[in-house]
Image (cartoon, rainbow, N blue to C red; front, top):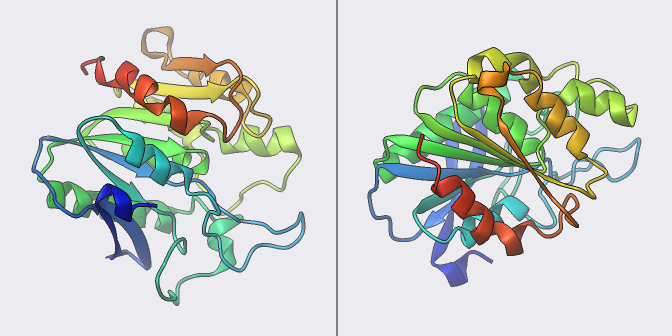
Length: 247
C-alpha cells in the first residue's frame, strides 16, 4: 500500500515499545508535520477473546496519510501493530483494557518527538482515527507544539463509549475526556459519520460539550459516512477544511 506512494516502513524504539511508522522515502524539511495515528485495529476476534495480533486488517489511518493532498505527513501505528518482528512488550492488555495506559501514551509521545526531529518540524497536526484519536488527544494535552488536534470517527471519551456499548470499563487506560482543560487552547476538528454506530455523533458532540463555549471544538458530521466509509475518499476535501484554518 505505502510503497507505490514512495513511502517506507520503519520501527522506532519508544519507551517500552517498538512502534511501527511509515514515512516518505525522501523527506523535505518543513516547519509543519501531520502525524496520523492508527485505530485499535483487530483488538478482538470475538466478544470474549482478544486477538493475538492487533494489526489492522485495513490500516485506515495510513490510507488517510497517503491521501493527504499537500504538506509533510507520517504515520504512527499503535503498540504491537504492523511490526516486522515480535516485541517482548506485546501483551494483549495493550490492545484491550490498557490500550490507553500511561506507558502507551508515553511511548506514542516519544515516537512523535522522534518523527518531529526527522522532519525538522516546529509544529504538529495530530490526526487520530477511531481509538487513535484518544492517543492524539492525550499526547496533545501534554505538548506545546500541536497546532491542530483532529479526529476521524474518534473515540474521545472512552468512559462514555464503554457505557454506550455496555462494555467493561478500560480501567488501565487514561480517558481524554478528563483532559478537556488541557486541550482548550488547541484548535480542533472532529469529524463524525452520521451513520457511525461504533462512535456515533452524540459521543463526539458530548466531548465537545466538555469545553467552555468560547473554546468548543469544531464538530463536522458527514452524512452517509459510518465508522470506515468514506473517509479516505473524502480526505482531500476534509483536509482543506483543516489546512485553511490558521491557528
